[in-house]
Image (cartoon, rainbow, N blue to C red; front, side, top):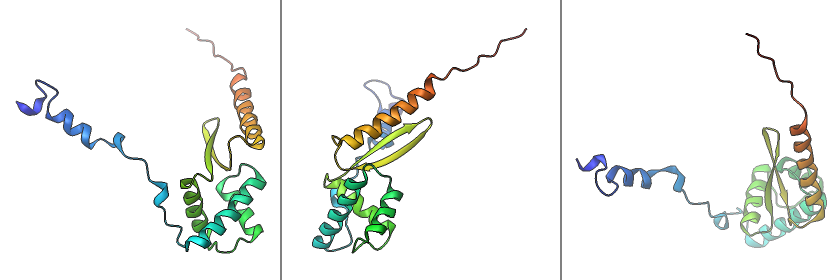
Amino acid sequence: MWWQGGGNGGVIKTFVRYLSNSRKRAPNLRKINPKVPQQEAASIAEALYDVIKQHGPVSVSNTWNHAKEASINGLNSKTHMKIMLKWMMGRHMLKLFCNHIGSNKKFFLCTLPEDPHIKEAINAEELKVKAKAKTPTRSKKRTR
């Protein structure tokens, strides 16, 4: 039968290949709408960039706290700030990196990966993870 895959690969293999979820395209971050006029988006982005650069690698919730303290004009809510951060990542103004702490992940925003504060934060987290991994574990003796 033609659907059983006899011969050169079969119809079912082709069908599965075209419909599999592993071939999704990456989202185009450049097409994110900042929901404000271009000039206002640029001024908000500059203020957010300064906040992130000043406070080093920060999480999104800490960015919101620092943005409230800096009283950035034009930010309506935390959701609007997240949209602006995605817009800035699409413009290659920010980077998002992940630190693995045990089985947990923490995501941080940073301005430049070459910034010494960022390297220190990454190295400190790596040392914590390595120290946890090196702790001796007790092995149970098997009894028969």
